[in-house]
Every structure is written in C-alpha cells, then in structure tokens.
Amino acid sequence: MQWISIVFMVMVCGITAIPADELPSRHPNPYVDLYLQRVLEAEASHKKAVSMEKLALVKLQIAEKLLEKRAMSREEYLEKQASYEVAVAAVIEVLAQISEAKSLYQLALVRTEAGQDMPICLK
Image 1 (cartoon, helix red, strand yellow):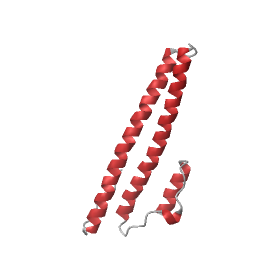
Image 2 (cartoon, rainbow, N blue to C red):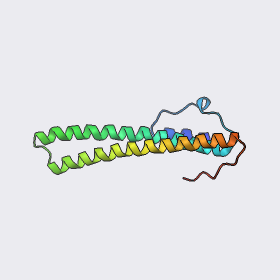
Image 3 (cartoon, rainbow, N blue to C red):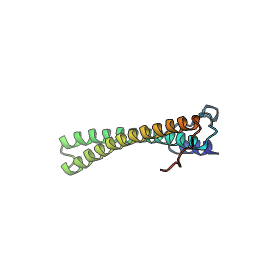
Image 4 (cartoon, rainbow, N blue to C red):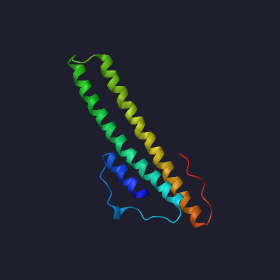
C-alpha cells in the first residue's frame, strides 16, 4: 500500500512514474521503508525545485532584456531577481533534505541489520 501512495505522489508531482516492478524491494522492518519513502520524497522535491529554479532564471533573463529596453520597471526586475535567488535557495535546502533522508535511511538499515530497534520516524 505504501508503494502505491509513492507512485501516486510521483505521478501527481508530474514526474515520470516508476513502474511497480522497478520499485525498491520492501524491507521487513517498516521503519526502513518509511525512511526510504523520505528519500524518494526528497528526490522528487529536488526535481521540482530545479525546475522552479530554471523557470525563475528564464524569467530573470527576460526581465533583464525588458529592463534594458525600458519596458520593465527596476522594481519588477528586482522582484524577478529575488524570485530567482529564492529558487536557488530552495534547491540548496532540498539538497540538505536529501542528505538527511539518505543518512536516516542508512542508519535505519544498519540498526535493523544489527537487530536494534529504530526510533519513530518523525518529520
């Protein structure tokens, strides 16, 4: 059931859906699956953030040309520049989330292989 929700989430985000037979194998410990889901969510968020950054860059480049031709005010240009900077920061933030999610996933794998309990998956 978890994998269905992940595939649905991926489809809703506009990212190419993963065929069910290509999904990572299920682990006997549900916490490992939860941490894997976090990794997949973070990676999907990264794709979205990169797309938003590209869009903001294109809008900024258009705004630069319009500003040169005096077809756009300086204030509007600064808004586009700020939007681009926010998009860049969002990509950096998501990269940190991916790193954290992968670390927690690895920790879950190591702890379960060692026969230790895994703390509750808090978000």
